[in-house]
Image (cartoon, rainbow, N blue to C red; front, top):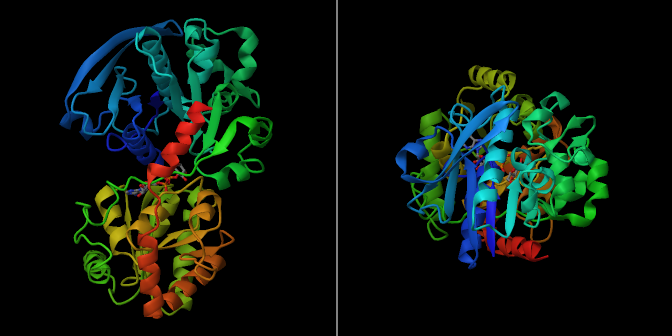
Length: 469
Ligand code: ADP
Ligand code: GLC
């Protein structure tokens, strides 16, 4: 079977979060299963672009609101990613340094989608499945079915995977001229709540819809940022498929980003060596349990609770632990986390920004990883942490609930809590300290989590069943 994935992110080309990791891994595993999976994404001005060789495979153009845009599709020649990688270049629109965060993002991603559909319509060799990811690619099923210029593609089946329904790509109707002419009777297929809602359109128009964990799909029926009734109505075509992790990239035995590689046999000594590197760099005490947070500093991740929860834990638990935070996001959260450093020197530190290497070192060197997320469609961090023998402390929501079982339960191995609140986080930190002090149990759990199989193999098969259906 031949599948074309369409996404705004794909690791290692460009990544802002877990979407990049998933789109960089799933196609590779689909190819290993004997299928042909390819990826098309925007050509941003990233380091990857300059470090790799590309060839031009197609040139075309399209008109939007009386302006003409030329686009070029380039293909990477080395195949090092494990799949055919295509980039869409639209001069001045997509070729920027960041993936998101520009005022004209609605236009940028609509143009990206038009270029993909236009290219597909001219490509003699067409895939059997077009698999689109998140709202930045979710207008494609509509375009393929209802835009006059492209509805000869309507027989190709489409799948939408929702990595995060909080972001829907809303556009006012004044932007309707971004979308190529469509059958006016089908306007309802673009709309939700009086605006153009690309994610809602994808849910309505795709042949099948998946979310990145079964637990998240359940939650969307009552909490989906306004789309609850749509999920209820379309539930027949929705399925929750848990993400996997790329065990070639996330493997402590060969990870070139970390200071000391390790496996089960030298876990204790090498994790200690990795922890020392972090403690030396961030002025922390290697004898105390190290609890880390890695992620986007936004409300969804409950990052706003971190300053109070960290302060409360250090104060009430008498500084028996250390905290280290890596992240970027809302500036007021960044400032609070930076200011906290002055109050708890030697107990807490934070690096504000995005740093792939440091994130790997933290998964390797930490004792615990904290994820108090209010919303977590799947979450990859907890799975990476476990693969590196770092015990997850998570709120029971979405994919976190599906992947972490509390050590107080039969066969459990993590620390879970109910509410995104300072109290619940502090209480979980207390439980982490108790566990850390029970050396035998602590080390048995580390060994147990390193052996959990969260690889893509299983989920890649489930996606193939979905395509067949
Ligand atoms: P989300 O996609 O919602 O941000 P996930 O848990 O699915 O959450 O994936 C987050 C990914 O982004 C992980 O690979 C994590 O290590 C990485 N990440 C997040 N913030 C940073 C950061 N500041 N520096 C490096 N990596 C980060
Ligand atoms: C989104 C979600 C995250 C998920 C990731 C990959 O960014 O917020 O929970 O793991 O996508 O699917």
